[in-house]
Amino acid sequence: MSSYDVIVIGAGPGGYVAAIRCAQLGLKTAVVEGRETLGGTCLNVGCIPSKALLHASHMLHEAEHNFAEMGLKGKSPSVDWKQMLTYKQSTIDTNTKGIEFLFKKNKIDWLKGWGSVPEAGKVKVGEEVHEAKSIIIASGSEPSALPGVEVDEKVVVTSTGALTLNKVPKKLVVIGAGVIGLELGSVYARLGAEVTVVEFLDAITPGMDPEVQKTFQRTLKKQGMKFVMGAAVQKTEATKTKAKVHYKLRKDDSEHVLDADTVLVATGRKPYVEGLGLEALNVEMTKRGQIAVNGTWQTSVPGVYAIGDVIEGPMLAHKAEDEGMAVAEVIAGKHGHVNYGVIPGVIYTAPEVGSVGETEATLKEAGRAYKVGKFSFMGNARAKANFAGDGFVKILADKDTDRILGAHIIGPAAGELIHEICVAMEFGASAQDLALTCHAHPTYSEAVREAALACGDGPIHM
Ligand code: FAD
Ligand code: NAI
Image (cartoon, rainbow, N blue to C red):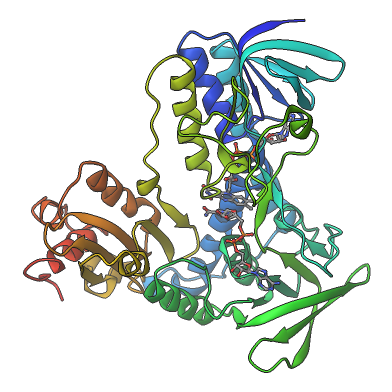
């Protein structure tokens, strides 16, 4: 039996970051991970592989659609899918090995295998039981099941199967117009698949700013993606190579069928707690199956903490990382803090979508007076030169104090631009603070400044 100050269960962005920070703070730390490689969902079957495929397919899209106009003539590249998967895998490998290196550098033990918590202060891995003063559960999430839809990870796939298809399908049906469905749907649309997205609600990406939703859906349609909205999927029927997707339109209950070579089920994810022994340990859970925690990420069992996708909040890698750092600080006797009001959300399509803070809907619901400053990328010189004029920056600021309350961006590099707003919000900045800050020309960032100007006396280039 080995003894540790901290044992972390799960080496995803929550767990590995918590472990590194614990070690940096002088705590003897081990991580239990059952996968062959470190990095969790994010590095192995999530953020990183999907972004590699998004990057490669975006390059193809640029070559096919914009190169000739810029005077770059010649045959457009064709898709070597096997090589694209090799590129994706090497991106995963570099990143997962990077975490292994960081573990060695910080003297963190990797306890290989699946862990459970037989009692507070103890973690069982295989037949071995280890002692720990504090335990952090960071076991992540898994795809939710959809009644009537049987996943085989070959023809009917979750995001995990969609990242390793043996060929680019001719017809892809995506169930769910959320983040996974739209990111992976646009990968395959750019690679030549006919993509139809079937969504239960009347708008894509629930919870997002309605103007962004509309512009986003319009641009994805322009790129060839088809949408069936307000449709409840009833069941799928699959053979070894094909599938049928049966759905009912909510407006009139009419029944329809779509044919597909591949069906991607992307209707959300749920916390992964299997095999941890939480019931026997009497750990309190939320109604939605998440581990319940207090303000310092402690569960109902003293000395047992939980972070990341397995607790409530957005299922995002950076949210898990922030909680990982904060819980380590708490365990080390310091003050750990996460500002849940300033967690950006990014969708890595083209155009990208970035948002943070309040939406008009949440502000209206709270009865808060606000103003809107909006600027279109059509008025941004850099965006126009780069064929990226679709989209806008929208800043929401308090009507009386001018303090920035949120921002919603659709357009080029939105996933980078949003961080300027995050920093401003963390410092309690007003829209005028941003508007008075000199921004280099020509940059996409000028659109952020112009939106801030639009909260006051007005933008210059619109
Ligand atoms: P995870 O990353 O899920 O890691 C949990 C780890 O715990 C796993 O490796 C698992 O094997 C291990 N584990 C579980 N139980 C045990 C046990 N009993 N014993 C030992 N090990 C155990 N988020 C973003 O912010 N940006 C993105 O671009 C993005 N893209 C995504 C794309 C896809 C296709 C998917 C599916 C998700 C994406 N996400 C993205 C979400 C992101 O992956 C998760 O929010 C993030 O991985 C959560 O981190 P975590 O540490 O809580 O859990
Ligand atoms: P999601 O919650 O984003 O979207 C699911 C969609 O499926 C919703 O629009 C919902 O209305 C729809 N839906 C549900 N049931 C349906 C049915 N029966 N028929 C038709 N549509 C139905 O979930 P998704 O896309 O699976 O992603 C899971 C999580 O992964 C997200 O919470 C997200 O945070 C994370 N993620 C983050 C990424 C990023 O940050 N860029 C990328 C990919 C995933």
